[in-house]
Image 1 (cartoon, one colour):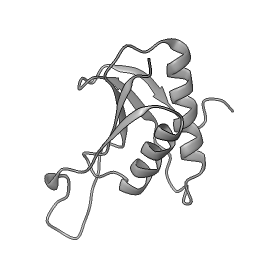
Image 2 (cartoon, rainbow, N blue to C red):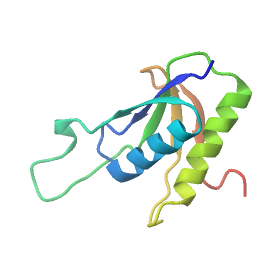
Image 3 (spheres, rainbow, N blue to C red):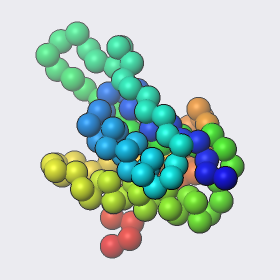
Length: 110
C-alpha cells in the first residue's frame, strides 16, 4: 500500500516548488494532498519572512524502501528547480507531529 502524503506549505515558503513536488509524488504513485499557505503565513507588510520551509507529512505506515523512494522524488524535484538560490532540507514528518522520519537534503547522495 502506498502511504498518503501531505506536501505541507502552510508557511508559504515556496508555493511553486510545493506544487511541483506534489505533482512529482503523484506521478510516482503516491496519494498526495497539497496544503497551501495559511492566510497568517504572511505579514501585512511588504516583507515576507519565512522561517520554515516545505515539509512532507506521512499518514500511513511506511517501510524503508518506500521512504527511500519518497526521498529520491524529493531530491529530484529539488534538482529540477529553475532557481537554486537557497537549499533547505525537506523534513518528512509522521502525521501532524514534528517527529521527523527523515530530513531529505539535495546533497545526500553526492
